[in-house]
Length: 125
Image (spheres, rainbow, N blue to C red):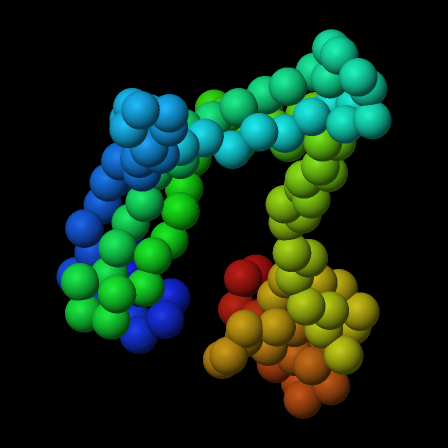
């Protein structure tokens, strides 16, 4: 893990965040998300324990929750996750076919223009 503020790798990870309640009771801090925040009751609450990661170089604090809790909150808040789309290979400007215009590679249309295509056909015979 790297600090987003200063770039240091000196991170104290997964520290407990504490809230002092009535009569100085300690309890873990949480975040809450509501499926229906305007409802009086039955809001569809999802909560998650808040953990802290602290950069010991600059003091920057990064809060996190578990991946499972983050996914649950994403579901009730209807967060759309962009699906990773495979990148299409670049299209060859000579023949219009994709995926073969690598350095040092000659496509068939170029080989034919400079006379190499016929030479390869003859050498294969």
